[in-house]
Image (tube, rainbow, N blue to C red; front, side, top):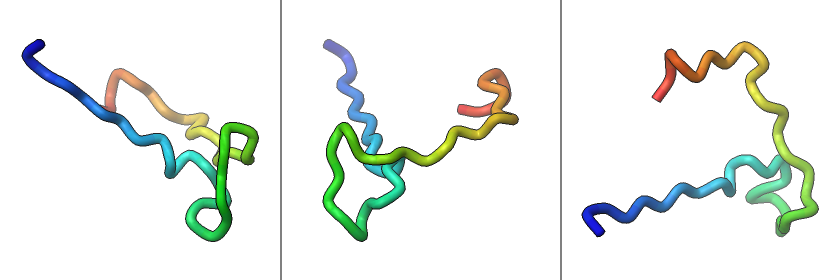
Length: 40
């Protein structure tokens, strides 16, 4: 293996860090105007 990448998704949860979160916690809405070809 040449690389090991870790991507955190904790900021996707609306209640974090004010309340504990798990897989059933509410998420932030995505960016509807996102063009994946223009962002890295």
